[in-house]
Amino acid sequence: MELTVSLETVCRLIIRAREMEAQVPGLAADEDENPLDADDEFSVMEDETNTVIEEEMAAALDDLADDQVAEVLALAWVGRGTYDATEWEEALEEANDRSGESPADQLMEMPMLAGYLDAGLAAFDLSCTGIGQID
Image (cartoon, rainbow, N blue to C red; front, side):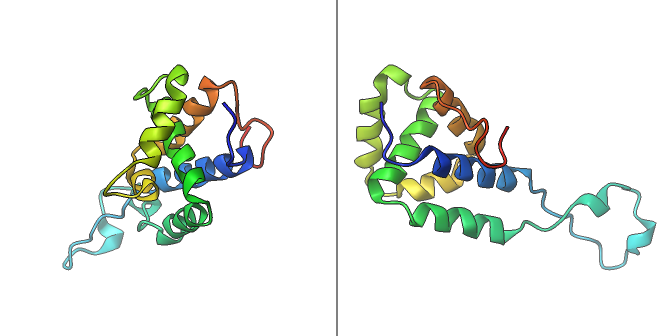
C-alpha cells in the first residue's frame, strides 16, 4: 500500500484531530449565579469549543485532492477496524464511491479520529514518530 497523501499531512491531521478531541465545551452559567461562588474549582479550565481548530482541520482536508481525502478516510476505517489492512483496496474503493456525505465530512464527524488514523498507520507499519510535534 502506497499513499498519495503524504505521511506528514496525515500526521498534521492527527495533531488537529487530537486538538479537536481535547476541547471541552464550557458550562453555561446561571444568570443569577456569581461565577466566584462556583462549587466546581475546575470550571475555569473549561473553555468554549474553539472553532478555529475545526476550521483548520476542514481547510486541511479541503486542500487535499478527492482521492487523498478518500485515502485518509480508508486509513481511519482500517484503524477503527471496519476494514483489515489486507482489505485496503476494498476500503479505498468504498471511500471513493461514497454517495451522500463527503469523505471530508465523515472524517470531521468521526469521534476518536486521531486514534483511528494512528492505528491505521500502524496497520501498515507507518507512524508519526519524529514528524512534527508527534513523538
